[in-house]
Image (cartoon, rainbow, N blue to C red; front, side, top):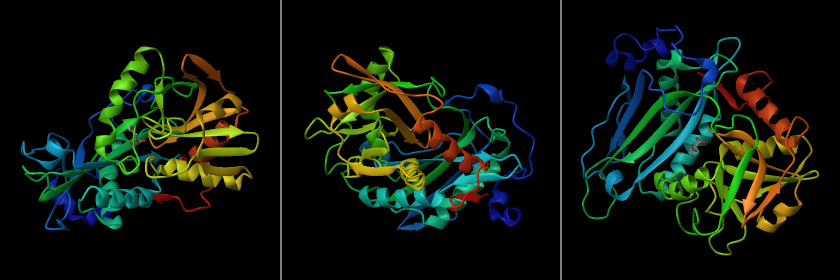
Length: 354
Ligand code: COI
Protein backbone atom coordinates (compact mmCIF):
# COMPACT_ATOMS: atom_id res chain seq x y z
CA UNK A 1 0.00 0.00 0.00
CA UNK A 2 1.04 3.61 -0.51
CA UNK A 3 1.18 4.15 3.25
CA UNK A 4 4.28 1.98 3.56
CA UNK A 5 6.13 3.81 0.80
CA UNK A 6 9.61 4.97 1.73
CA UNK A 7 8.81 8.08 -0.27
CA UNK A 8 6.85 9.35 2.67
CA UNK A 9 9.97 9.49 4.76
CA UNK A 10 11.33 12.39 2.72
CA UNK A 11 8.19 14.49 3.01
CA UNK A 12 6.77 15.61 6.31
CA UNK A 13 3.88 15.75 6.89
CA UNK A 14 2.88 12.69 4.90
CA UNK A 15 1.81 13.69 1.41
CA UNK A 16 -0.92 11.12 1.46
CA UNK A 17 -2.81 12.20 4.54
CA UNK A 18 -4.33 15.49 3.38
CA UNK A 19 -7.65 14.79 1.71
CA UNK A 20 -9.05 18.26 2.09
CA UNK A 21 -9.76 19.84 -1.28
CA UNK A 22 -7.45 22.69 -2.30
CA UNK A 23 -8.82 26.19 -2.16
CA UNK A 24 -9.53 26.65 -5.85
CA UNK A 25 -12.23 28.06 -8.06
CA UNK A 26 -12.93 24.69 -9.68
CA UNK A 27 -15.51 26.19 -12.05
CA UNK A 28 -12.97 28.34 -13.86
CA UNK A 29 -10.02 26.07 -14.52
CA UNK A 30 -8.15 26.67 -17.75
CA UNK A 31 -4.81 25.26 -18.81
CA UNK A 32 -2.59 27.53 -16.76
CA UNK A 33 0.02 26.38 -14.27
CA UNK A 34 -1.29 26.10 -10.72
CA UNK A 35 1.64 25.14 -8.52
CA UNK A 36 0.74 22.10 -6.40
CA UNK A 37 2.34 20.59 -3.28
CA UNK A 38 4.78 17.93 -4.41
CA UNK A 39 6.92 16.85 -7.32
CA UNK A 40 8.74 13.60 -7.93
CA UNK A 41 12.38 13.24 -8.96
CA UNK A 42 14.42 10.26 -10.02
CA UNK A 43 18.00 10.56 -11.25
CA UNK A 44 19.90 8.20 -13.49
CA UNK A 45 23.62 7.91 -13.95
CA UNK A 46 25.41 4.99 -15.56
CA UNK A 47 22.09 3.72 -16.90
CA UNK A 48 20.60 3.00 -13.48
CA UNK A 49 17.76 5.02 -12.02
CA UNK A 50 18.06 5.65 -8.30
CA UNK A 51 14.98 5.37 -6.10
CA UNK A 52 12.58 8.18 -6.86
CA UNK A 53 11.45 10.61 -4.23
CA UNK A 54 8.81 13.20 -3.60
CA UNK A 55 9.78 16.66 -2.50
CA UNK A 56 7.99 19.94 -2.11
CA UNK A 57 7.20 21.47 -5.51
CA UNK A 58 9.85 24.05 -6.28
CA UNK A 59 12.88 25.00 -8.31
CA UNK A 60 15.39 22.48 -9.55
CA UNK A 61 19.12 22.96 -9.64
CA UNK A 62 20.90 22.45 -12.96
CA UNK A 63 24.44 23.09 -14.09
CA UNK A 64 24.63 25.73 -16.85
CA UNK A 65 26.35 23.00 -18.85
CA UNK A 66 23.45 20.52 -18.50
CA UNK A 67 22.77 18.69 -21.76
CA UNK A 68 19.15 19.80 -21.76
CA UNK A 69 20.05 23.49 -21.54
CA UNK A 70 22.73 23.39 -24.22
CA UNK A 71 21.52 20.77 -26.66
CA UNK A 72 17.82 20.30 -25.80
CA UNK A 73 18.33 16.70 -24.75
CA UNK A 74 14.91 16.28 -23.23
CA UNK A 75 11.49 14.68 -23.57
CA UNK A 76 8.16 15.27 -21.96
CA UNK A 77 4.86 13.48 -21.47
CA UNK A 78 1.45 14.65 -20.33
CA UNK A 79 -1.05 12.56 -18.38
CA UNK A 80 -4.23 13.21 -16.45
CA UNK A 81 -5.69 11.89 -13.18
CA UNK A 82 -9.48 12.10 -12.86
CA UNK A 83 -11.59 12.10 -9.72
CA UNK A 84 -14.69 9.92 -10.07
CA UNK A 85 -18.07 10.35 -8.49
CA UNK A 86 -17.20 7.52 -6.08
CA UNK A 87 -14.05 9.41 -5.04
CA UNK A 88 -11.59 7.07 -6.72
CA UNK A 89 -8.69 8.60 -8.64
CA UNK A 90 -8.02 7.12 -12.04
CA UNK A 91 -5.31 7.34 -14.69
CA UNK A 92 -5.90 6.77 -18.38
CA UNK A 93 -3.55 4.34 -20.19
CA UNK A 94 -0.38 5.32 -18.30
CA UNK A 95 1.48 2.39 -19.87
CA UNK A 96 1.10 4.03 -23.27
CA UNK A 97 2.87 7.18 -22.14
CA UNK A 98 5.57 5.09 -20.49
CA UNK A 99 6.16 3.18 -23.74
CA UNK A 100 6.25 6.42 -25.73
CA UNK A 101 8.83 7.87 -23.36
CA UNK A 102 10.97 4.76 -23.82
CA UNK A 103 10.85 5.14 -27.59
CA UNK A 104 11.65 8.86 -27.32
CA UNK A 105 14.50 8.22 -24.90
CA UNK A 106 16.08 5.82 -27.34
CA UNK A 107 15.87 8.49 -30.07
CA UNK A 108 17.35 11.16 -27.78
CA UNK A 109 20.13 8.91 -26.38
CA UNK A 110 18.84 8.86 -22.83
CA UNK A 111 18.06 6.05 -20.39
CA UNK A 112 14.37 5.85 -19.65
CA UNK A 113 12.44 4.71 -16.56
CA UNK A 114 10.89 1.26 -16.79
CA UNK A 115 7.13 1.14 -17.33
CA UNK A 116 6.68 0.25 -13.65
CA UNK A 117 8.94 3.09 -12.48
CA UNK A 118 7.07 5.51 -14.73
CA UNK A 119 3.61 4.49 -13.52
CA UNK A 120 4.75 4.39 -9.90
CA UNK A 121 6.07 7.95 -10.21
CA UNK A 122 2.78 9.14 -11.70
CA UNK A 123 0.78 7.47 -8.95
CA UNK A 124 2.93 8.93 -6.18
CA UNK A 125 2.72 12.39 -7.71
CA UNK A 126 -1.05 12.21 -8.09
CA UNK A 127 -1.57 10.89 -4.55
CA UNK A 128 0.76 13.45 -3.02
CA UNK A 129 -1.24 16.18 -4.77
CA UNK A 130 -4.61 14.55 -4.24
CA UNK A 131 -6.24 17.69 -2.91
CA UNK A 132 -5.54 19.33 -6.28
CA UNK A 133 -7.47 16.76 -8.32
CA UNK A 134 -10.59 18.68 -9.37
CA UNK A 135 -14.05 17.43 -8.35
CA UNK A 136 -15.76 15.12 -10.89
CA UNK A 137 -16.68 16.95 -14.08
CA UNK A 138 -14.59 20.02 -13.29
CA UNK A 139 -11.31 18.98 -14.88
CA UNK A 140 -8.33 16.81 -14.06
CA UNK A 141 -4.89 16.83 -12.51
CA UNK A 142 -2.50 17.19 -15.44
CA UNK A 143 0.84 15.59 -14.80
CA UNK A 144 3.85 16.70 -16.74
CA UNK A 145 6.69 14.21 -16.92
CA UNK A 146 10.14 15.35 -17.96
CA UNK A 147 13.18 13.31 -18.89
CA UNK A 148 16.13 15.66 -19.04
CA UNK A 149 19.79 15.33 -19.90
CA UNK A 150 20.72 16.95 -16.59
CA UNK A 151 24.43 16.10 -16.43
CA UNK A 152 27.13 18.60 -17.46
CA UNK A 153 28.51 18.38 -20.97
CA UNK A 154 30.41 20.70 -23.29
CA UNK A 155 31.11 18.83 -26.49
CA UNK A 156 28.07 17.48 -28.27
CA UNK A 157 27.36 14.14 -26.60
CA UNK A 158 24.71 12.54 -24.39
CA UNK A 159 24.67 14.04 -20.89
CA UNK A 160 26.29 11.77 -18.27
CA UNK A 161 23.24 12.02 -15.99
CA UNK A 162 19.50 12.12 -16.69
CA UNK A 163 16.71 13.31 -14.43
CA UNK A 164 13.09 12.23 -14.54
CA UNK A 165 10.70 14.72 -12.95
CA UNK A 166 6.93 14.67 -12.50
CA UNK A 167 4.95 17.71 -11.46
CA UNK A 168 1.24 18.39 -11.50
CA UNK A 169 -1.31 21.12 -12.06
CA UNK A 170 -5.10 21.03 -11.99
CA UNK A 171 -6.47 21.84 -15.45
CA UNK A 172 -9.71 22.41 -17.29
CA UNK A 173 -10.09 22.97 -21.02
CA UNK A 174 -6.90 23.48 -23.00
CA UNK A 175 -8.23 26.11 -25.36
CA UNK A 176 -9.71 29.38 -24.21
CA UNK A 177 -12.62 28.51 -26.52
CA UNK A 178 -13.58 25.88 -23.93
CA UNK A 179 -15.62 23.25 -25.75
CA UNK A 180 -16.57 25.69 -28.54
CA UNK A 181 -15.24 24.95 -32.05
CA UNK A 182 -11.65 25.89 -32.87
CA UNK A 183 -10.55 28.05 -35.76
CA UNK A 184 -7.29 26.70 -37.15
CA UNK A 185 -4.79 28.36 -39.46
CA UNK A 186 -2.75 26.36 -41.97
CA UNK A 187 0.88 27.35 -42.04
CA UNK A 188 2.73 27.23 -45.38
CA UNK A 189 5.99 28.93 -44.49
CA UNK A 190 7.13 26.86 -41.51
CA UNK A 191 6.95 23.15 -40.81
CA UNK A 192 6.75 21.29 -37.54
CA UNK A 193 8.82 18.24 -38.41
CA UNK A 194 10.86 16.65 -41.18
CA UNK A 195 11.36 13.00 -42.12
CA UNK A 196 14.24 11.62 -40.08
CA UNK A 197 13.86 14.38 -37.48
CA UNK A 198 12.33 14.12 -34.02
CA UNK A 199 8.70 15.03 -34.79
CA UNK A 200 7.51 11.51 -34.01
CA UNK A 201 8.73 11.59 -30.41
CA UNK A 202 7.84 14.00 -27.65
CA UNK A 203 11.13 15.87 -27.72
CA UNK A 204 11.00 19.21 -25.92
CA UNK A 205 12.76 20.65 -28.99
CA UNK A 206 9.64 20.07 -31.13
CA UNK A 207 7.70 22.70 -29.27
CA UNK A 208 9.68 25.97 -29.09
CA UNK A 209 9.96 26.20 -32.90
CA UNK A 210 6.16 26.34 -33.27
CA UNK A 211 5.82 29.30 -30.90
CA UNK A 212 6.47 31.84 -33.64
CA UNK A 213 3.70 30.61 -35.92
CA UNK A 214 1.40 29.90 -32.99
CA UNK A 215 1.78 33.43 -31.61
CA UNK A 216 1.25 34.92 -35.04
CA UNK A 217 -1.90 32.86 -35.61
CA UNK A 218 -3.25 33.67 -32.14
CA UNK A 219 -2.69 37.37 -32.67
CA UNK A 220 -4.91 37.05 -35.75
CA UNK A 221 -7.65 35.38 -33.72
CA UNK A 222 -6.98 31.73 -34.58
CA UNK A 223 -6.95 28.99 -31.95
CA UNK A 224 -3.93 27.05 -33.20
CA UNK A 225 -1.84 26.20 -36.27
CA UNK A 226 -2.22 23.17 -38.51
CA UNK A 227 1.03 22.12 -40.20
CA UNK A 228 1.58 20.57 -43.61
CA UNK A 229 4.27 18.02 -44.41
CA UNK A 230 7.69 19.49 -45.15
CA UNK A 231 8.40 17.43 -48.29
CA UNK A 232 5.31 17.76 -50.50
CA UNK A 233 3.99 20.77 -48.61
CA UNK A 234 0.47 19.50 -49.10
CA UNK A 235 -0.48 16.77 -46.64
CA UNK A 236 -1.95 17.49 -43.22
CA UNK A 237 0.40 16.64 -40.36
CA UNK A 238 -0.71 17.86 -36.95
CA UNK A 239 -1.61 20.91 -34.91
CA UNK A 240 1.02 22.48 -32.59
CA UNK A 241 -0.57 20.85 -29.55
CA UNK A 242 -2.59 17.90 -30.89
CA UNK A 243 -3.39 15.40 -33.65
CA UNK A 244 -6.04 15.95 -36.31
CA UNK A 245 -8.91 13.87 -37.74
CA UNK A 246 -11.33 14.45 -40.62
CA UNK A 247 -14.77 12.90 -41.06
CA UNK A 248 -16.56 12.24 -44.34
CA UNK A 249 -19.75 10.20 -44.05
CA UNK A 250 -18.87 6.98 -42.24
CA UNK A 251 -15.13 7.32 -42.85
CA UNK A 252 -12.82 8.91 -40.30
CA UNK A 253 -9.25 9.64 -41.42
CA UNK A 254 -6.14 10.84 -39.65
CA UNK A 255 -2.59 11.34 -40.92
CA UNK A 256 -0.64 8.08 -40.73
CA UNK A 257 2.21 7.78 -38.24
CA UNK A 258 5.28 8.17 -40.42
CA UNK A 259 7.97 9.60 -38.15
CA UNK A 260 6.85 13.22 -38.36
CA UNK A 261 3.56 12.83 -36.50
CA UNK A 262 3.26 12.28 -32.78
CA UNK A 263 1.63 8.95 -31.93
CA UNK A 264 -0.95 10.42 -29.56
CA UNK A 265 -2.48 8.21 -26.88
CA UNK A 266 -5.82 9.97 -27.38
CA UNK A 267 -5.41 9.56 -31.15
CA UNK A 268 -4.91 5.81 -30.73
CA UNK A 269 -7.85 5.52 -28.31
CA UNK A 270 -10.19 7.44 -30.62
CA UNK A 271 -9.26 5.18 -33.52
CA UNK A 272 -10.27 2.15 -31.42
CA UNK A 273 -13.50 3.70 -30.17
CA UNK A 274 -14.49 4.84 -33.67
CA UNK A 275 -13.84 1.37 -35.10
CA UNK A 276 -16.02 -0.16 -32.36
CA UNK A 277 -18.78 2.29 -33.28
CA UNK A 278 -18.68 0.99 -36.85
CA UNK A 279 -16.83 3.86 -38.49
CA UNK A 280 -14.23 3.00 -41.06
CA UNK A 281 -10.97 4.50 -39.80
CA UNK A 282 -8.12 5.21 -42.19
CA UNK A 283 -4.60 6.25 -41.25
CA UNK A 284 -3.28 7.75 -44.46
CA UNK A 285 -1.90 10.82 -46.19
CA UNK A 286 -4.55 13.56 -46.29
CA UNK A 287 -4.00 16.25 -48.96
CA UNK A 288 -4.99 19.70 -47.75
CA UNK A 289 -7.42 20.09 -50.68
CA UNK A 290 -9.55 17.32 -49.21
CA UNK A 291 -10.66 19.74 -46.51
CA UNK A 292 -12.94 21.29 -49.12
CA UNK A 293 -14.99 18.13 -49.11
CA UNK A 294 -15.23 16.88 -45.51
CA UNK A 295 -18.07 17.03 -43.03
CA UNK A 296 -16.14 17.43 -39.80
CA UNK A 297 -12.67 18.05 -38.45
CA UNK A 298 -11.55 17.49 -34.87
CA UNK A 299 -8.36 17.46 -32.84
CA UNK A 300 -7.21 14.99 -30.19
CA UNK A 301 -4.58 15.12 -27.48
CA UNK A 302 -4.09 14.54 -23.77
CA UNK A 303 -4.34 18.22 -22.94
CA UNK A 304 -6.90 18.98 -25.66
CA UNK A 305 -8.95 15.75 -25.22
CA UNK A 306 -11.18 16.01 -28.34
CA UNK A 307 -11.91 19.44 -29.72
CA UNK A 308 -14.23 20.23 -32.63
CA UNK A 309 -12.83 22.38 -35.44
CA UNK A 310 -15.29 24.92 -36.81
CA UNK A 311 -13.07 26.38 -39.50
CA UNK A 312 -9.67 26.10 -41.13
CA UNK A 313 -8.14 29.02 -42.99
CA UNK A 314 -5.58 28.41 -45.71
CA UNK A 315 -4.17 30.92 -48.18
CA UNK A 316 -6.91 33.39 -47.37
CA UNK A 317 -9.74 30.90 -47.80
CA UNK A 318 -11.83 29.90 -44.78
CA UNK A 319 -13.42 26.45 -44.89
CA UNK A 320 -16.16 25.67 -42.38
CA UNK A 321 -17.18 22.34 -40.87
CA UNK A 322 -20.13 20.84 -39.09
CA UNK A 323 -19.96 20.88 -35.28
CA UNK A 324 -22.52 20.50 -32.49
CA UNK A 325 -24.58 17.97 -30.60
CA UNK A 326 -25.16 15.62 -33.54
CA UNK A 327 -21.54 15.49 -34.66
CA UNK A 328 -19.27 12.46 -34.73
CA UNK A 329 -16.81 14.49 -32.70
CA UNK A 330 -19.34 14.92 -29.88
CA UNK A 331 -20.19 11.20 -29.93
CA UNK A 332 -16.52 10.25 -29.63
CA UNK A 333 -15.90 12.92 -26.99
CA UNK A 334 -18.73 11.65 -24.78
CA UNK A 335 -17.47 8.10 -25.01
CA UNK A 336 -13.82 8.87 -24.33
CA UNK A 337 -14.52 11.25 -21.47
CA UNK A 338 -17.14 8.83 -20.12
CA UNK A 339 -14.51 6.09 -19.91
CA UNK A 340 -11.87 8.40 -18.46
CA UNK A 341 -14.15 9.75 -15.76
CA UNK A 342 -15.86 6.45 -14.93
CA UNK A 343 -19.33 7.42 -16.21
CA UNK A 344 -19.08 4.66 -18.81
CA UNK A 345 -17.87 1.11 -18.37
CA UNK A 346 -14.20 0.66 -19.27
CA UNK A 347 -14.41 -2.58 -21.27
CA UNK A 348 -10.87 -2.24 -22.60
CA UNK A 349 -9.10 -1.93 -19.26
CA UNK A 350 -7.75 1.49 -20.14
CA UNK A 351 -8.15 3.05 -16.73
CA UNK A 352 -5.95 2.37 -13.71
CA UNK A 353 -6.91 3.19 -10.15
CA UNK A 354 -4.30 5.10 -8.21
C1 COI B 1 -0.41 17.10 -24.11
O1 COI B 1 -1.46 16.98 -24.73
O2 COI B 1 -0.26 16.58 -23.00
C2 COI B 1 0.71 17.82 -24.69
O3 COI B 1 1.80 17.45 -24.40
C3 COI B 1 0.52 18.97 -25.59
C4 COI B 1 1.07 20.21 -25.00
C5 COI B 1 1.39 21.18 -26.07
C6 COI B 1 0.13 20.82 -23.99
